[in-house]
Amino acid sequence: MKAYDGNKRYSMQPGDYFIARKNHLIRYTKFKENDQFENIIITLDEPFLKQFLERHPWDVKASDDGDSFLFVKENTLLKSYIRSLEPYYTGDLELDDTFADIKREELLLILLRLEPNFASIFFNFGIPGKIDLEEYMNRNFRFNISLDRFAFLTGRSRSSFKRDFQKTFGTTPGNWLKKKRLDEAYFQISKQNQKPSDVYLELGFEDLSHFSFVFKKEFGKTPSQVATVAL
Image (cartoon, rainbow, N blue to C red; front, side):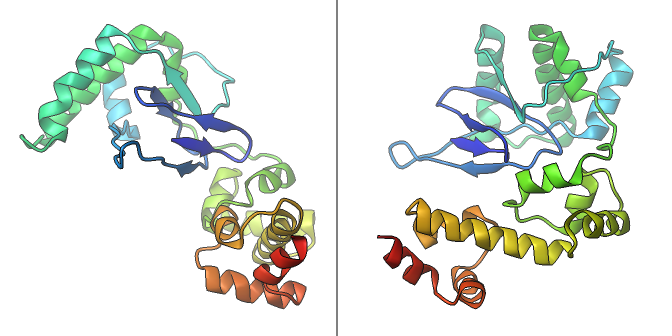
């Protein structure tokens, strides 16, 4: 599996263990091996993490590690833990909520034993602070998320996000995002020989026909015509 967070690219191989951090925008590309793709995902949500801290008080130190993924080295404890889950994720048994929390607690204790500094990642319950809007949007415009989500991730309310956006870019978020994505699409198709069918999803367009329509409206040519000229 490969992933991209708007700033850095990550590559995960079979057998890798990693932590995906909250409030990070990620695009995943999954690759099948022998026509199969299997993964195990365990979510450590905020209510569970707060309950864990009540039972296991932990000294949490600040961390400036901004990576979206933190890789964990394979070891005997983790391998044994994954094997212990096999009856549940194969469907032979059904895991009730109480036992699920026990298994999550076991995993968290293992991870903290392996790397105590992970505590600053797990137990960070603050909301994102107000950050540089121009830098953030230029890095993350490819992600197709709501304005409310963009506002939250930049540390703003919806109204202050729209107000700051107008001051910074001189237009509305919707107009800026469409223009930015279309300009990037034109560049990738005309200069980097990318296929329109590959570009539209990467740049946050959900539908190829709609992408072609707005592309032609903006540039006077369809993506396919631009691709033909580029060749």
